[in-house]
Length: 466
Ligand code: ARG
Image (cartoon, rainbow, N blue to C red; front, side, top):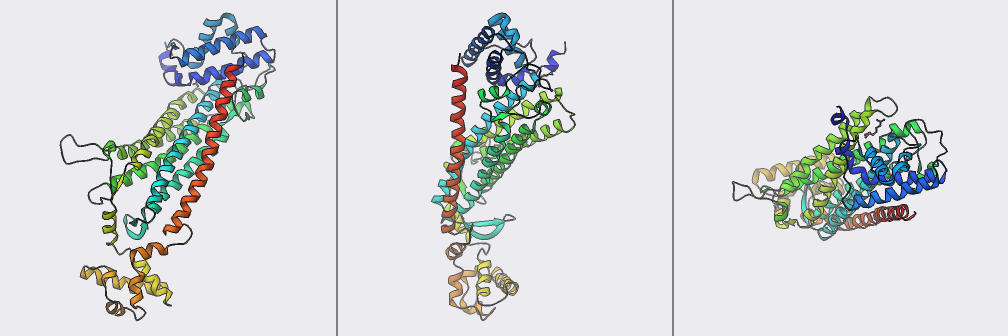
């Protein structure tokens, strides 16, 4: 009667592959430790391998009569191999089983997300290199601040995404531990071999405390946070593209593939994909909140509330991977309007700081220089002119320290080239940042793909040993 309420099958059916893999490792261990007779362990293994094949061929129908994916797999095994199947759940509980399955899922999700993050980093870094000397206004408070290069700006996004990838790879270490064998909460009296199942499933090691193992969802929270943090970065990028492609800014034009027209206004080209990336961040932030609230009042150890974590995990993964998937090509196909950026650079006195610094180099204290240049800027605003349009005589009216070199000093290209401090926007510094980012991305790539290959070997070994 309550099955429709308590069932988790509609959500956890996604874990079927991992559930069968975990069961395979468990069944072999039961045989090799003598907990169940060899022949019975072997027939369980054969049956599970068949289930895996049927699943991969899309021929495994889960029954809604059963509460979750775990009971389904066990039931199908028993139907396939008879009595031996009834021994599978020896020395195991769904409590350690569900955590084992979810950890394997999150592990794969992390590797896929990191691989996507590396691809997006690469596309942005390549574009940054092409645009390392292209000038645009740098903003603070969305007001014109100082000249920067487009490459410098894009690299700022790259370093954000690089930290995101690092966060996932760091969380990976804590995900990759095996709770299998924790039982319901207290371990078991059977002589199980947890090292063996951990190794067979590619985990670094078994977890330490059985009660913690069935209660622990830190790995889920860390994953959800890393997803939400990344989505916040992607949302900020989406918002920026919405601004850049607006007619008022006109800094960039979206390729048609990532924009749509309006159903009523024929002139419109809407940056829908960027807007949706921004909008979908709300989902992931919501998922993280849901998980934190889910966990906050639970006593040790397993509580049925924990069943509610999976939907949020799947949603985080699906949202983020879909957004990363569209983002790379969207940036790759973006047309930058360099002339519009150059025009924007001529407004807003981007070189005012440089003019003040010029006075500082000639001995004036910075605060005083700030005041002098403030007066020069007001003078220009009143007359509708830019700083570089002033004559030396006009400048000298504000301070005798100005001379003809002052005008050369505030040429926008000179302002950009000059910002050569470590991490600055000069093309030379941006090239340094590009090299550093590429080297680090290579490190992330090696880690990620090394782990993907290692897991492939783990799976082929798990299936090969009969
Ligand atoms: N469907 C449950 C879940 O997803 C499986 C664990 C149930 N454990 C239990 N003791 N009832 O969490």
